[in-house]
Image (cartoon, rainbow, N blue to C red; front, top):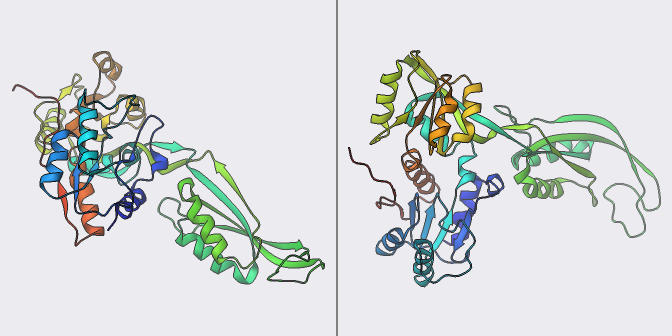
Length: 365
């Protein structure tokens, strides 16, 4: 098995299209054609993690955080990033990062966090715009079902809990094949009138290549008529954070104790308690302060995230409880989730979860 087989699978889970503009996900070191001897899944990639991979015969590291995040002008080993990259390259270790694109999918980091806490009815907290496109094409009536089925199989027409969605209008298409044409219908230099279906389907923009290939492979015409339109609609299955409900309302202190126990937290930094039951909870793995307004709008009583600055705690303004559980602590279970996906896809292949604690923060309790 080659590196690109693993990375292609990971990109079906978390399309690179969904990573934030500042991010640096995808393959950071190694060759796509490199043969894989084993996979090590980690939250961060450090020198210790590279050594752990070597010790366990793994030459592909799948990390949530990209070790190569900012541009480098030199690699001399002057800091941990440069040393990690040097060690990986010297020992032919491929490093793949799956960061904010994994944060921004329905079944990603935030769903895992919400499920561990015990939230139900989980949904995206801040759905993302400009991630959907519309395809309009024109199909001979007798081929409409075949073409639309191919488009649906490629991922078009999925809207929330509904699939195979399309809109169809019947009309008359006209065309005149030239001498150079090889028409499926009609004769050269003769105007043809064909009963056609105008079909419209919506699809995630990152699937455009697959959708267009399915259209061209299934459509009978030599020249397929179509047009693509980007949509400003929000995509309910892509975006930041998640929100859900507890099975039963909990008293605020009891919920925080539950949070601390369930996630094995050494400490929780939180704003003042407000004396009301906790039912709706918003979550965001990693740095989530930018989502505080969305959590309040969603009616959450608690927002579970990390990396809040001192003055940002004031923004709760007695409308919500901020529970800062720590960056590492909010995302560390991502390793188990990713490893489970990889093992299911590659059941005969060695997939290990890193045993290295990469948390740079320590606590005295």
